[in-house]
Image (cartoon, rainbow, N blue to C red; front, side, top):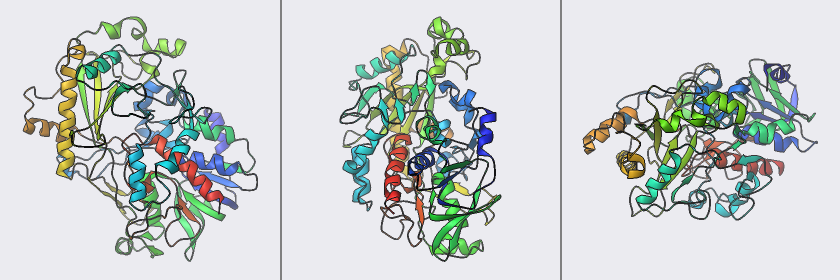
Length: 529
C-alpha cells in the first residue's frame, strides 16, 4: 500500500458497530475478514500504528530493518537476571498487518503434542483434532492438500526456490551427524533437518494483508482505522459495550474482540479494570473483574545467535550475490528473497519424547540490500522451544500513554539455561562437521574449549528474545486463566480475546501459523453468538 492508499484508513470513527476488533495484526486481520464476510454484521478494525512501508515490508531480506522505529514497539524489558541483568527489546509489530508485516516469515505448525497439552491443561476443545483442520484451512501450500497441508487457503506457504550456497552444506552437515533429513518440517515427522517453509510467494512477503485483509477492504460493512490507539474498554457494569480512543468512543452492539498481542492485550485489560485486584488498586483503577491471571504466564522462546565467518567468500561474491539489490529488483532472487532457509528441530536430551530445540540457518551475507559485509558471515539461531521460565506484563501507571512493564523472565529457571547450553553445543558440533567447517572459521566470540562456564558466560551475554511472546491471558477454567475455551473473558460479557496471549503454553515453533489458525477458530466461535 502506498501512503496515498493509506489515507483510506483515516477519517471519523463510526458511532456504533456490531464488532470492534482491537489490533490489526495477524489475528485481527483474520477476524476482520471473517466477521465482515457476513453482510449483516458491521465491523470496525482499529490499529494504533500506521500503514507499514510496503517497499520495505515486501522484501524478505529487509525484515530486520522493520524491528525498530515506527513499524515496531521496542518493548524494552526490565533487567533480566538470567541474562546478566541486561534489558532486551522484545519487539512486536506496530502497524497494519502487525507481526505478519515485519516478521521473518518462517511457517512452522505447532506439534500435535502442543495442542494436546492445551486440552489436557483445561483448554477443552483446543486439541490437535480440533485445530488440525484450521491449520489446513489457512494454507495455500506448494505441497498441495494432504493430511497436514491445505491448498487454496489465504496464506501462501513455500520452500526457498533459490538456495543460499551454504544451505545444502547446513543440511549435509546435519545428515553427517545422523540427523534425519526431513522433506517436510510440518509433516508427519518433524524431528530432523530440512528446508524452512515461509510466507513468501515469488520472492515477496505474503502477509495477512495479502491473504485476508486486502480482499475484504471493499466491503461496505468493514471500517479500518489506523493511528487509532485504544485507551480503555468501555464497560457498562460487567459488559463490554465499546472502546475509548483519543479520537472518541465507539459502541459495540455485539462484542469487543481484543487482538493486540501478548503484551498490549493484558495492558489494555488492566487499564480497563480487568486484572489482579491488588495491582489495579495500586494504580487507582476501579476493579471491574478480579482476574489474577491477567499479565501472568508471559513466556517466549529464548534464543542465542551465533555467527560464523565465511572463509570461502566466493559463494557470496559470485553470481547473484555480486549485486543483491539489483538481482532482487530484476528477478526476485538472491539473498534478499529469503531470511531463514533451513532448520533443525532436535532434542536437548535423548530421553525426551518430543523435540525442544530449533536451530535455524539465517542469511546474513549481505546487510539489508546494501554492500556485502566486510567479513561475510552466516548466522545460526539456537532457540529453546519449551521454556519453563515465566514472567509478567504489569502496569507502569494508570496512564494509557505509559508502556507496561515487561518481564519475560528469560532463563530464570536453570533448566532453561542448561538446555540452551546443550543447544549451543549442538550448533557448534554442526558447524564442526566437514561440510560447514571447510568454508567457515570459528564461531565469533565463542571460546574454543567449550567449558560450561565459558558457554554460560556467552549465553548470558548474548541470549535474547525470539519475539514469540505468549500466554498473558491464557485459556482455561482455573483461577489463573483469563478466558474460557470460548475465548470469552471470565466475568465480562461481550469481550473476547483472540491472539497469542491466550496460548496456555508456547508451541514448539514460530507462532504465526498457530495465531492465524486460532483466529480462524475464534471467528467461528464469535459468529455463533
